[in-house]
Length: 342
Image (cartoon, rainbow, N blue to C red; front, side, top):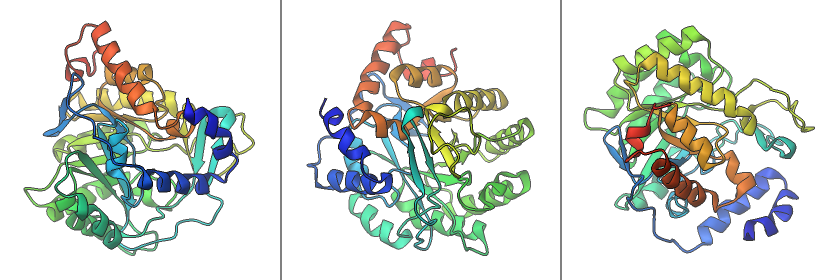
């Protein structure tokens, strides 16, 4: 495989520089056809997804290459997190490959070019096909973060298939406090007021580092507010046994070591919601079998990012083809039929 030949050279680069080069290569690549509806087509929050596999937020922070990602075989692409004003993020180095663990630690800090620049790019694709999620955040130095989310909702509503409210990044101090019950209710009220009655569905991205009482409260609020979906989960601040010399770096851990925790949190939210809210399974997914297990555990959609670092751009199509095989093998006629069937 071509990626296997280039991987040593890519891994010799600083991870953040390698990421920028990857984005540049995607920009220059010809735009191929996006994934079309087929046996994996499914509907979530009123949106038709050609397949349930998406690119998670964090890869395309500024909305530079969503259509190129869709052409890789993803059924949807989520860009961001985008904040109202541009911000540089945390000091470098802030992105680390844990090769021995097939993992990544990042403490990027919502580095992005801000809403205005993103709108100029995303508005150019407004009439194009494909499901686009826009992940919104708050500026680190904001004195009113709820107002930031409301502002981002107003700005991005005309451009998004769905909005993903990210209050679970560990790299913006105090952000996860918005997952507390009273703060979350206030936040979602502001987001829905800003979105209006005809706006896109609102998804909420939660952390894996939650206590049972937090899970129950978030589930209850999600049902009450009629969220489009819960995205379970973001990166973790926990540190399982890791072999890499970068294991002690601060930031959010993603990739293979997050798999078991993210799967358990998905099951926890499935139980807490009783299947009343669609779930998006994220964290440590690198194979079709792992994506299928997440679906069987209750995920209507799945996302990945870190696995692309180690498996390359052919991974989405391999997972998509694998899911088709697994669905037929287990006797299901659709993804929706398999959700929560474990």
